[in-house]
Image (cartoon, rainbow, N blue to C red; front, side, top):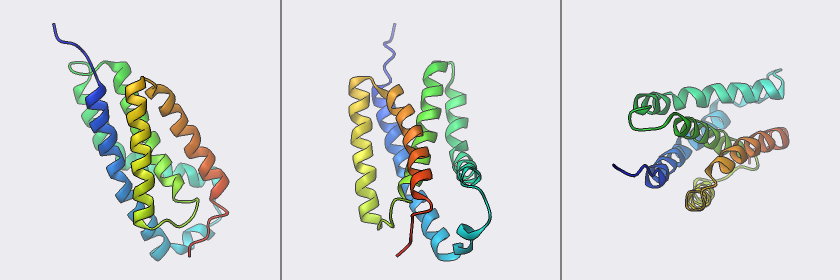
Length: 153
């Protein structure tokens, strides 16, 4: 009889998900340098958020495939949902943070490290479900409150 403990797996998973932060920062750099017309297109803010959601869902497909292949043999279905929603919420949050102001890579990576330590504390305290919900809500709030106020330098 083996003990089912996800702490270390969740720690490495969240570290890997936050590693996607570099790709997200590069997406934003690409958008600022070559797709500047995109912000002027007549798309509603909710539609724009959905477009970013689709982009990051496509980026997240390999993780979904991996998680689905591990379920139910190695991973309980409830934990698989937690992994999926946590990872997707983190991608949306990392994207939304970049609309607060133009962050350089070093500044942005400092924010990513702080988020990792918050996730680490959540793993230790068993509050990952709450952190998952908060990541989704915070990503929506930051996007809708910061998108039109964002100005690139």
